[in-house]
Each structure stands twice: as structure tokens, then as C-alpha cells.
Image (cartoon, rainbow, N blue to C red):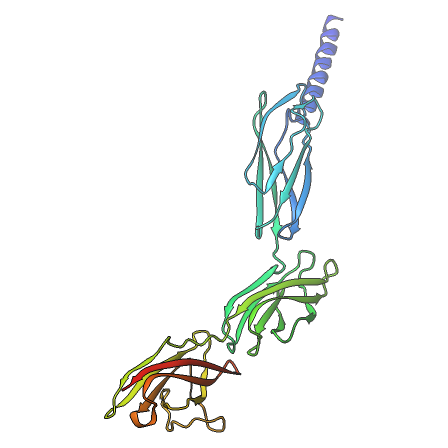
Amino acid sequence: MRIRNLVLFGGLLAIVSMGTFVWRAETTPGLASEVFDIGTQRPGALIEHRFQPRNNSFHALRIARVKSSCGCTVPDLRDTTVPPFGRMNLPVTINTTGKTGPFQAKITVEFENHPTIELGLTGQVVEEYPAKIDFSSLKRGKTVAKDFVLRSASKDNVRVLSSKYDGAYFKVSSTTLESGTRVEVTVVEEIPYGAFDKVVVLETDDMEVPKKSIRVVGYVLPPVIILPRNPSLGNIESDKLSSIELSLEAPYADELSLIAVDSEHLKYRVVLPNAASSSVTASTPAPKSSVLKVSLSASYEDLPKGLLAEEVKFRVRIGGEEQTISTTVYGMVR
């Protein structure tokens, strides 16, 4: 009888021990680290997520502090105590502004009575298209282009179906790639002078956001011509031919053509570029350069005596348009 009782008692202990062992194997005391995948997002997106890891212990856990590895991820700790077998409540806001490519961030949670845990965030940030294309300063007549690759956060390969833009300023073309579409914006040669701020609208097959709007800005440098101030022939004497060389400069243009020079007493000759004749008219090929040098000369016999103040008008072509600029040439006829 005693032997049978001992056997039964030993079997009961074995059963209890096995049950206790199984329960402990399925339970992890305290809180465990975890990772949340934000998926594929666009730059500038705001994503909200709530971390709720379970406290698998018989003790309340007290949170000492919460730290983020990136300013783009902001935790909002509302309750510093996690009850036994309850869940931690930690809302997190992720801002993808300025981010492209693989995204990773980490929230570190430190406790007073538990080891530190880490809550991870991972994903991809895809830049679909630039919000603005800046051409900065441009010279009219120059072909300048900028391009970018159009991608989509919701579609593997987005295509451009059509585009709307101001044809007086630029043209837009697109080429489908294996991943995305290359879009090229090219400034036209006859673009108007001054600042421009336009919008290009791309119609795409992206079902989530079919229309993509891009600002295109820049400044076309004006056709400025620089002339020397107060040029002087000096003293004009009876036995000498007086002359002076003037430079006309167009720093923001590639072409400056002289059409004609209008002066009552002074004769002119084109020095740069070389010209075969001093008689340039609209019907003859005009020398082209961003700098023109013109020699003005006067004979004593052709000038009135005394102070000379002769207005000289230069008719030029710059950036495809005609302009007339003038200066006053001074001298003393003795």
C-alpha cells in the first residue's frame, strides 16, 4: 500500500512539473522588441502607427524615457505604466519629407524595472517627381534642358499619357524606362525675356494620383547692351584725322549684330568682327558677336568749330530683336 501511494504521488508530481514547464515555454516575460514596415511612401507623407507590445509578466512595467533615432519620427508617450499582461500604448508619427530610398528609424524605450527594448520602422520612400524645376538664369537662344525620372509609390512603372504646358516657354517629352518614365523639359530658343513661373501638368496611368503638377521657374536675362560713357575725340586739329574706338557689349546674349550707325558728322568703321565695308545696311550680312567694336572718326573740315557734342545712334539686332541705342561723343574743334 505504501509503495502504491509513493508511485501515485510521484506520478502526480511529474504531471504538475510537465504542466509548469509547458506554460513557461509559451510565455516570454516582459516586453519584446518589434519592427513595423511602413511600406512604400512618397516624400512628404505623414504616417501614423501605434506600437502595442504586450507585457507578458506578472509585474507592471514603468517607462523611464523614450528616444527616437531620427527627427522624422516622433513618439507620443501617453502612459508610462504598462500593466501585467496589458499592452503598451505608444503612437508614433513618421514624416518622410526630404527622405528618398530605404527608410529606417528606431524608437528606444527605457524602463525603470525592465531591460531596454527597441521598436523599429522600415520601408521605402520613392520620389515620384520634383515639386519644382529651377532653370536659374538663362541666355535667350540657348537650348537648355533638364530631366527627371517619374516614379509612383502605388505603381511599379508609371507612364505619361499626355502633358500640358506653355509652348512659348518650353517643350516636354517623355521616354518609358524599365522603372519609371524619364521626363525632359527643354527651354525653347525664342523664350520671352524676364522671369517665368509656369506649371507642367502630366497626365499619367497612375490610378491613385493621375495628375502630376510641376512648377518650372527661371529668368531669361534681358538684352542689355553696354556702351562707354562720355566718349571723347579730344582736340580736333586741322591737320589730323581724329578717331575713337567704341565697344558695344552684350554680356547676356550670344549674338549682337550691327545694322547701321546714324551720325551727322562722324564716319564709322566696324573693327570687330572684321567687316569688309563700313556701310552696313539691313540688306547686307551683319557681323555677329557678343562684342562689337566700332571706330568713329572725324575730319576737321567736316566739323563746326568749337565744342563738339555729337549724338551717335547704333541700330543693332540682339536676341532676334532690333534695338536702337545712342551715346554722345564729345570733342573740341579748334
